[in-house]
Amino acid sequence: MAIPKNTMKLPRYAAENRCELTDFCFGPTATSRLLLALTAISFWAMSIAVAQDALPASPAGPQIAVALEKVSSASIQATIEKLVSFQTRSTLSAQDPTAIAAGHGIGAARDWIKSEFERYSRDCGGCLEVKLDTFTEVPGSRIPKPTEITNVYAVMKGTDPESAKRIVLVTGHYDSRNSDNGDITNPAPGANDDGSGTAVSLECARVLSQLKFPATIIFLTVAGEEQGLNGSHHFAQMAKSQGWDIEAALNNDIVGGDRSPQQDTGVVRVFSEGVPTAATDAELRQIRNLGGESDSASRQLARYIADVDRTYATGIKPMLIFRLDRYLRGGDHISFNEQGYAAVRFTEFREDFNHQHQNVRTDNGVEFGDLSKFVDFDYVANVARLNAATLASLASAPAPPARVRLLTAKLENDSTLTWDQPAGGRVASYEVLWRATTSPEWEHAQSVGNATRVTLPLSKDNVIFAVRAVDGQGHRSMAVTPLPER
Ligand SMILES: [Zn+2]
Image (cartoon, rainbow, N blue to C red; front, top):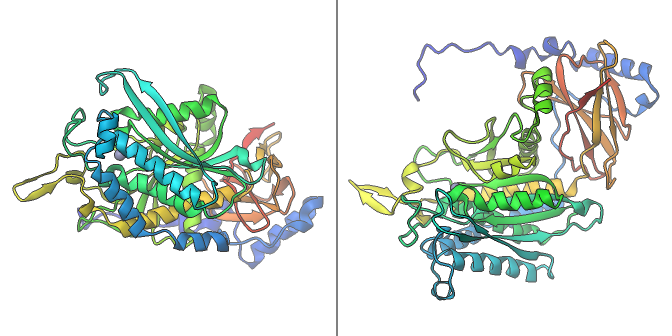
């Protein structure tokens, strides 16, 4: 490690002196203080449970836990090796019948992915609607001539008519490249980038299609990523123009856990935008005024993933990176962010740049190329578990509370939040979350029963609040931060 020995450690003020920081803590005295205050202030107070110190992990759904055990590294390995067998999946490579029959090029890969989704659907009594989103991309800097691009996806419609309008989505890109992004014939195995992400989407479909969920799940694989996010851009734009309510998009790109000695196989990075890419000028002003730089819907999704990981045994820890993507890099989640959707990117802890975007070769004893042998299939399986657990939790949960507001009509040291019941109902209770303004994750949760208005003896100036909905089995919705209302 390159950290100098004399590096100064910051005092852990925020973590250890949280009570001083918020002037509110949950020792016995403070708990009674809270209960007294709550009892004194309004009619719903009797429904308030005893406040909890740490944020409790959400309870595990038994069905979801069983499904996660069915995620298989052997199945993922078979998917990745099949994708590599097409030799190149360059978006510019062949997709004519002869090439498809020979099993070469992106057209053959597209047809195989479609046939896999159809196979899973047969195994669940036709529960998946398998679809193609095909369009012709006009020439651009990385597209020399008009090129047909196809996204392949499977829709598992929710079982509850109202909740089925809500969509959670997982995606990976099935196109690949080698050293030359214009090379359409030489090998571009793309085992890790992004055979691994494609395998996560397929594995989630295989396993979750055995269950039923109130909300809709879409399992997506896109092309054109290496040419400029073309496939995901087209898909997200179509979703927006058709008014789809995509609550979360999980993009998996380079989740192969490259087998370099410096890899940490226990960690996957989760990148999320802070200030929303799609924010209007008015929204940007509000973010500046209120310190909302770390509270985009995508950031709430990242926190949700961390919460899911505390609930289910996935075998991997998400490392939340509060950044849109890595330096100099982009990915398909950005296409969803641009349309105003919450979206994050999963990527392995440490990338080996000799094993991505490289011609397959050996130079001075160093192996280059994105080959299957560098992929850790158990690692990909763990990432797939974390994705599947997140999709299943969100698709089981009620919709997030609507019109969440923080009342600011007068200057006071208490904070009053209001919200509306979400469409689709299925809410057993609501939880108010809060954290210090300096803290990355939610620190406290307070159940308020089925009230839609609460006053807490906490100053809104000192903390960040959010509200989430909980169903009868304990499935949590995404957290929603309030807008101020006079
Ligand atoms: Zn990629």
